[in-house]
Image 1: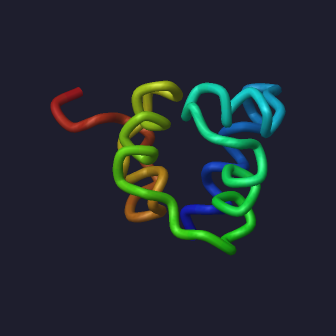
Image 2: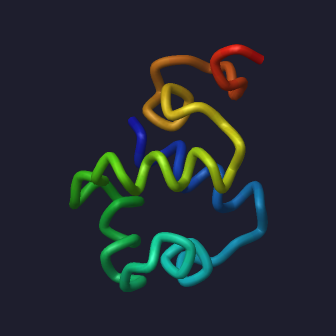
Length: 72
């Protein structure tokens, strides 16, 4: 499920896969595989995306539909 969320977040922010790959400091092909579910996204990348998009990791993982971080 997370792969759909990270793609939706990228599209909502009008970013290209290349842009997000640069944020994660990885190759565009690696990020593409995260988005299409062909490769599991590592925890460090989820945390980095969470900070970049200002949402909770739980939201990116599809555990909750609330984008708010804990304590907010």
